[in-house]
Length: 151
Figure 1 (cartoon, rainbow, N blue to C red):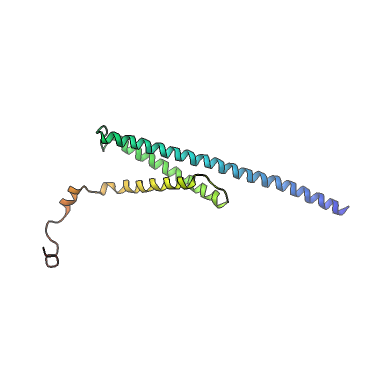
Figure 2: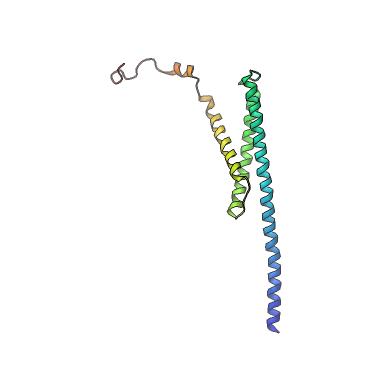
């Protein structure tokens, strides 16, 4: 009889532990699916931003929008806001990947984040970039080392 009671105890422990484990795994899988939806939404939003920017660029080429127009600063603000949120989503997705989950479209999402990161870095240095004419005026007119560089 002792073996039967021990077996009953073991089966009870197994059944309870299994329910908790299954529920935890289910919760993790559902959270990963939710994250995949967020990644998909982020990619759609990124594509929307790129489309809007392309329309503004087309309008700028037709002289309908100037380079100092407010739309450019608003677009940059929207890209930065998208990037800030996307970095957090990427961090969560990386955590799921380390746990063995596959997050769909993560590579494409990472590429979009990288592209916006590059754009933001360019925007930060853009005010320091000179036109060709400005650069020519900044160059010293005389040969800085006449003995070394003969004309």
